[in-house]
Amino acid sequence: MSKNYKAKTYYGGQAVIEGVMMKGRNVYATAVRTPEGDIAVDKRGNSSILGKYKLFTRPIFRGMSAFLDSLIIGTKILMQSAVIAGEDTEEEPSEFEKKLQKKFGDKLDDYLMYFSVAVSIVIALLLFFMLPVWLGSFFARFMTGTYMLGVVEGLIRIAIFLIYIYLISRMKDIQRVFQYHGAEHKTINCFEAGEALTPENVRKHTRMHKRCGTSFLLIVMVVSMVVFVFIRTDDIVMRMISRIVLVPFISGISYEIIKWAGKSDSVFVKIVSAPGMCLQKLTTAEPDDDQIECAIAALVSVLQEEEPEAVPVHSGEWRYLAPEA
Image 1 (spheres, rainbow, N blue to C red):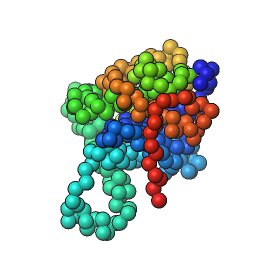
Image 2: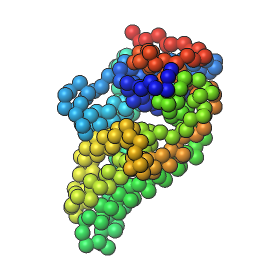
Image 3: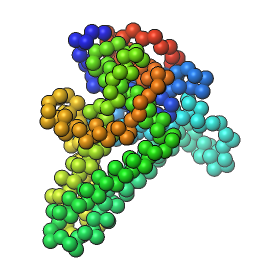
Image 4: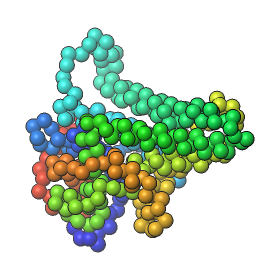
């Protein structure tokens, strides 16, 4: 592949249990290292819940759609990767599980996935939006207006987010996921540099990337602080409701910022991206060759569908899982 080759799509991905997911415009592929040591690849077509509506293809609204899709796909592939990697061992189902299986049949896994997404959203809202409002209310007596209260609340939100990232980064199991996260970034950086996707080439690239989800979440925190400064109310309940209602709007703005940053190498963009890039030092780690090979397998599998002319020569071998009926 020539260094003059320009990718048609900005590819992204996600670290999963013992593997990496890579996502293009039309398909996504998840490559997972199995207990036997080989790489299993699950390739599927992209489907969007809101993207089929014209409104959600427009700026701001497309970010809302992408955010929801990423939550659903992310949860789904995490569950799948745990099974493929052998961490979700087969056990005799409990009586309660048998009743659920009998009632919902083949739809049970889908319902469990949507339930997991709903629980994740509720926890995120409580931790990163409700808790900062409650903690910020203790500072209200020292302020004459609500503008500064919005700033204080925003700083508390960012502090909670940074503490959360730091704490999970200390967990041993998460550190391995962060290695796959680093492999994902290195592989995308290698491809965007126009180099063949080999472990040797991928290894020399940085594990930081401007379009990383970590950077996106940090931008969400900053954008929310700016937006909430203009939401003036002394009533704590109304402040909490406004935070929940505006979350989709904030995610849409943040999506446009990260999308814009990914297309430019200007000095201003580098300044805007710097905090997120620094934070990635916590959420990524240097991968080994086995992890890099998983990331290559995932990206090449997507490229074979999206840009076959860009697929570089690779030395890895992997097997594709049979598509679901």
